[in-house]
Length: 115
Length: 114
Image (tube, rainbow over all chains, first blue to last red; front, side):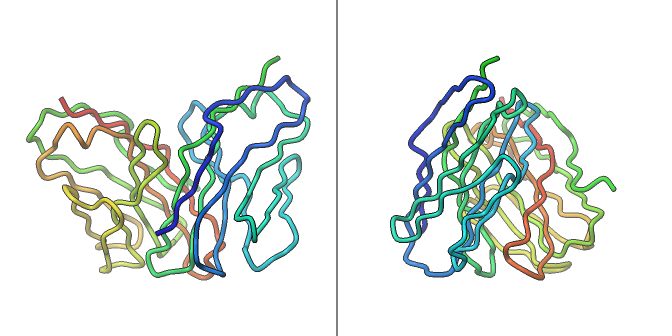
């Protein structure tokens, strides 16, 4: 079974600074997908960024980028020029392309952006 | 375009009561799923469906039933609520055509069982 570990329960950073959230996972699969979801206080689950394991190039979405290290099974999220609206819980998730398409989530990192 | 709509947003039940959490999507997504979110844990898959008439169990199915009579709707039923089912429940949907397509989540239902 796959497991996803987020070792930082809470983080805080000053507005406009850069912050990196860590995620490691355990799998024997070679083909899979990784995601970062954001959950603000409104409780919505919002997709931030996704990465296909067969792609070596790290995904980027505006201020959000990932550092995907397949051999190390590491998938960190970097937020540049952090904004107050980035305050949220961030969940790392793993999915292998099987019939149930189950997302396996980490326990989350609570990120606070300080004005 | 409403996306994924969950009702109700909040509910309090007594142990032994039954209820149905509603989930509807207007994006013509074939795949739908239910997750529960508990403190200190990530979301866990309860049941899923890959199309109308097809459902299957996820990671934590005990105590829950589902059905999928239409593409749009995927209700989750608690037949006899237990305090262990106190949680936040999320419904999600996505297109089947490629696994890297994101799952769209509803806003969640916070359920408390007394």
